[in-house]
Image (tube, rainbow, N blue to C red):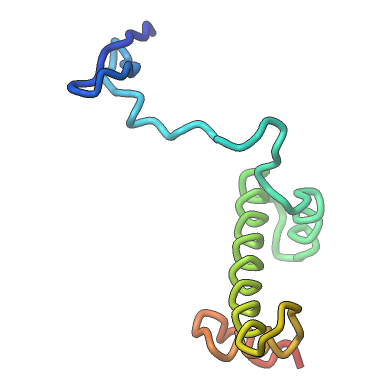
Length: 119
């Protein structure tokens, strides 16, 4: 496929166009802007895979599924930590305590499934 460079209308900046399909580069997802060598997942994928395989109902788990589970776990931990930190700030503290997690679980409806798990 031959790629041609054209000037976007009115902006004066070049953009790439696919000569055969006519799709612009703007319709493609942007390249990752993180630093070179940066990991996409902060959790070790080998550990996540080991946890998944520990479930007797799981027979096979692909790398993409493991990555998505790791990313979902990261987002969950980040969300509950932020909410717990807000509870700590209300108590004029910077250090998270267990009661902050309990308060976040009680205050946020999305964490209702965790009620009673930290007892």
